Amino acid sequence: MTNRKKAYIFAGLTVLCWSTIASAFKIALLYQDGFQLLFGSALVSFLIFLLIVLLRGNIRELFRFSLKEFFYSASMGFLNPFLYYIILFKAYSILPAQVAQPLNMTWPLVLVLISIPLLGQKIRIVSMLALLISFTGVLFISSQGISGGYKPEQLPGMILAVGSSMIWAFFWIFNVKDKRDEIIKLFWNFFFALIFLLISIPVLNISLPSGSNAWLSSLYVGCFEMGFAFIFWLKALKYSETTDKVSNLIYISPFLSLIFIHYIVGEKIFFTTIIGLILIITGIFIQNRNK
Image 1 (cartoon, rainbow, N blue to C red):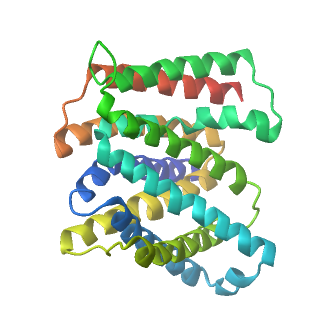
Image 2 (cartoon, rainbow, N blue to C red; image 1 turned 90 degrees about the vertical axis):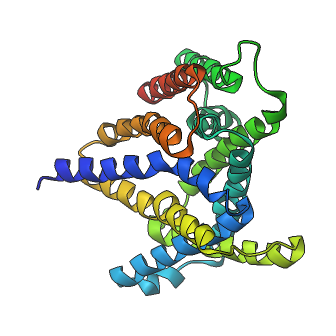
């Protein structure tokens, strides 16, 4: 099998995993709150990364880091998965999945905005056009099929969904500065996230997940949102001749996600969701092509 075929197979597996996640979030949150879901899924992901490190035989590499890198991993673990998923799961508990998922996808556009003060980058006219198109898409999705605008009671959820994209954008900027192996970084990110979660349990008087449905849903999220999906994606990038060939396949994911949301979660898909999603993807695509 050629590397090109391998790249598309792994990219396809990634798309399939991420296409089911919005539905998985909504189902998982029926049996537990966001904190419990994060604890269970983060624990599963941590064990997956530990297993990969053991299979690769580079357990010693886990401890080859400076004190600065130690605190860097702790900071990244607080940012993602700890803070990022707490906010994202809260957004999903408030909003329909078809609204929360596209709003969370706006992080590449947020990345452009925060790169201006953080990285000193200048925004181009093409980037401004991309942002305008995607922002129009956000307005369409927020209306949820209502001609008069959004539902006021769901405004906090919308703010949280977009806020989660901001956290992910900050995480992405800081993470690329860390040149260590990706699996090693993820291992420590989830290790420290679990530490923060364990500290939060007595402080916030939060209970752990209970019941088979809660743990099974956490197992799915931990495997296919935080664990295997990322590994599949790294494999796809490794075998691909150019990253843009497989990166563009990711744009299929949110549209497939709507199918799962409709038939599994049972949500009626608003026409404004489809229009808004097309506009958001168009803006992101224009921005990426500009780069």
